[in-house]
Amino acid sequence: MSGRVFSLVGGQGQAPPSTPEGAAKLVGTLLRHLRVEKGLNLSDVVKTVPEFNSISTLSRYENARTLLKLENVTALLRFYRAPEDIFRDAEALLQWRGDQRWWSAFSDVANHILTSLFALESTSKVVQVYQENNIPGMLQTAGYARAVMADYAHAQSNDEKRREAFAAIERRLQMRMRRQHLLDQPHAPVFRALIAEWVLDKQLGGVMVMREQLRSLLNVAENKPNVHIRILPGSALRKGSPLHPAITLFKPHEGVENRSVYLENRNVSGEFLTDVAEIETYMASMDYWWMQALPKDATMERIQHYVDQLARPAPE
Image (cartoon, rainbow, N blue to C red; front, top):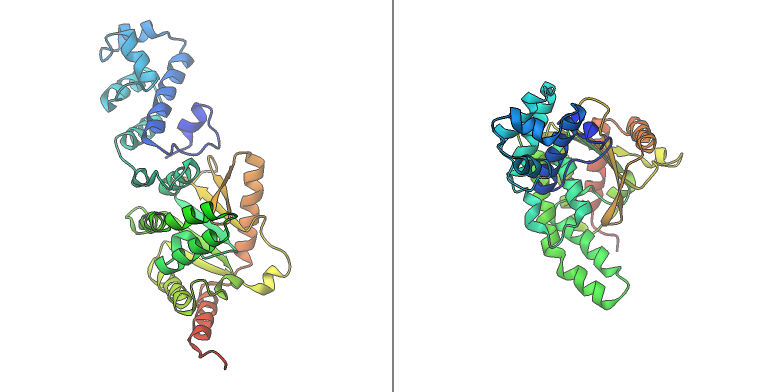
């Protein structure tokens, strides 16, 4: 989706809507913006556009208080002489409006930050991740993901929170595994994962779980052309490190508009950056550290090194 709709309605740098209702409201706001931009009131439009027979009907469209039909929205856009890319964006948003996104089934474990994250992933052409705590969630095996979640649950400050965290593990695991299907879709984003080397040397879940996880990384890197995995070696990290231990950069299209940065806090929700200058700073940092990473062949060799280490018998 181009950045045109978001910039028109005052959302420069804003994330795409995370719910069908949010998509409908964005279309309504767009219609109202175009009408006001033309200097028209509601009655002016109703007199001219036959699809709308009353001011109240048009008002409901602009406030997204009714089901928005594509043919009616198109009639308004044609009347307002909207650019061609606006037609495309509005159609995409209306398809979203009628679609139940997969994460709606996980409202019990996905807060609004997570649903916004999933929405950005699903609408991006490029997703770039840096992780120095764990393997990125998009690339985790079920065993490894369960171990990460259990580690988080153990760390809770009181018994009640600890019990709640353990009780939610299976649902959160289902959500994480479902999320990974994005990378197998026909129009999957390019996914670039930069992983600090010491993540490979951990044994979350034990030797067997970690070995399975590392072998899965090798398999994905070798067989999914849209996934690019690079290891940031310890030698590079001795000279410094990226600006945050868990960064995700989203590029929704080829242009520079509407790029977003998400900073994850350990195994829980994080925050989205909204300041354009701050986003540019994180983007530059991500680009710099990507260049410090091992190339593909050396990355594969380094991962294999840690797989081989896990295969060796423990010293007595």
